[in-house]
Length: 430
Image (tube, rainbow, N blue to C red):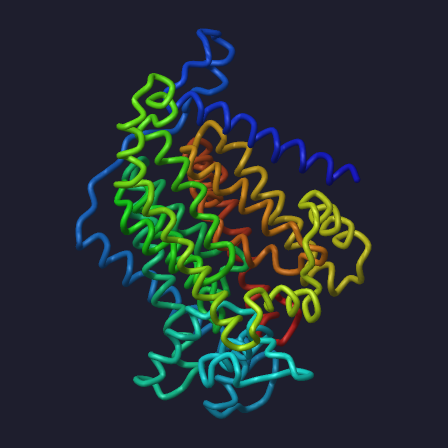
């Protein structure tokens, strides 16, 4: 109960401060009170630096080299801990852990390829990642190889977009550090396996970049692709709307009677944000085409994964309760990492409320709420790998407190090594 109340206070308190800042930055004065001005002041680093095609190519190459190194270490872990000989096929099959099986099934034969008790359970998984795997299979002739390659390439592309994004507002060392933190986050192991984390990450990172660049057509396109990757992708509409309101001072224009100007900005720029709904629409149509029910996935999520909707404070409270009271195995495999990821996310939110742009804070608020609003929140640590503002806030913090940099990097890298090995031992790393 105490954890639930504390989490609610911090998240809703941050939301209230964000709302005040949004009103102020959108052109409506909240008075000349020094206390209010200080509370709403933007304390972000500012600055920025130039990027070149050579820089981006170097980032992409280093990111791919990192994924290749992790892949080789994974093979070493498999041989050491399983202590047996593997054929190439057997080795690849170790990548079919948990949800990876469902992505392979969709890639092979679509949503009607596999059933459980007469239910098309793969409808609980979004289609963009397996559809891309199916295309790559024309080249690699194997769904698992295609999935691993696709995840790695999209991860590397995400690093490039993060570098370009941070180049707009931060210094070079802060941008590089954010990439490192994102890469060695304990559950970043999912960026190189047959899961759709890299797909959502890439589409989200591209969307954030184009939001910041105010290229609204590309915001809509990449936002729609993010929404076709996972339900959380549609949440990118929130930071897009926040940046649109602030950048063009829409509320101020409306208040001062410039309705036509505000309307023009809406239909020429803001309307592109609604294109994100196309991603969700395609996914819902898949549900309808297969079962005749647009929302059949909700039934399967509840029936097979116990993912009914609950208040996010209750979900966070359950995570911490299980981290204390569950068996040792599940505590360390699932619940303690989830508790740590929630602490990190909320800490990044509170820290970033004045140190980050409103678009990042707004996304982190809704992302925390949505991903913990489940009756059985078993994959929160994995979901937080795609919470981009966490890594931006962490890098900003360590730039101001340099002594924390080696502690953050080393502790997360060790955690990633442990959970990577456990994942390939078929432990419940979800």
